[in-house]
Figure 1 (tube, rainbow, N blue to C red):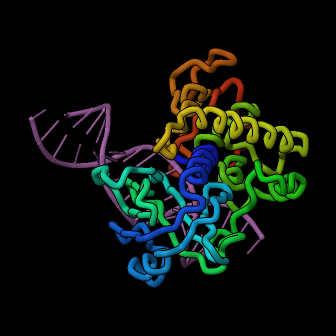
Figure 2: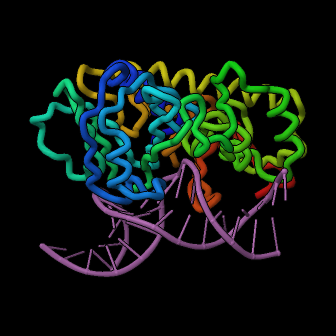
Length: 284
DNA sequence: CCTCATTCCTGCGGGC
DNA sequence: TGCCCGCAGGAATGAG
């Protein structure tokens, strides 16, 4: 699933391949892909034709492409979204949702999304920060991320630490995979109550979050090739480095104990029962 | 301001 | 061989 490292990898690819190019036409092949654009697919396409992309920015798991004025194209990959650079001659992908052509007749930008949780919207005045994502917190790799505010807000909460990590209004960019990996690195069980975490523990957790995201970006960057804006949703080569996610029944690389899987928030949480013991009074 | 459950979607793979 | 069903899960939404 695309989380911050995958989206950052996509951002770098897009920046290289579409910045400075002028859009000639946009075909919406599935209306759900632009469901957040209230005026509909036709209007969405009309607004984009003739516009020049001036860059590619990211906050958390959101991407946006500032255009040649104060507007922007904002998007989210959802769970299965891919952004591909493809030759105009390449056949349609099975789950092609949006096709963007450029005036130079060069590689097209294609949004391919099996489960259609992803989508795009036209953001009027959104070049600096689209209103569609203004409610999302800065991500931990943002130089302006406020560590002290994050720590204070997290410790005021009355919930499980993993729930807090997944709350995009508190810290953005972390999804199920990297939450589990960061918690393993920090030696914290997902149910640890935020109220009882010390400042020191939160500071360490934030360090682990940053280290796992940074490591994953490093791995994701290696899977690039010319006309492919990485996208596999399986985090480049980082899946080889996962310590607990998807590793139920396999040995923890730190202590050898079998990794366990527990249901949480209608999904799975993976942890090492020895390195991440269940707290005396777990939160949910 | 929280906190938390529900909903959207489709391909895959396990079980029978 | 084929059918059913659970599972994967980010984020908007609304209830309390």
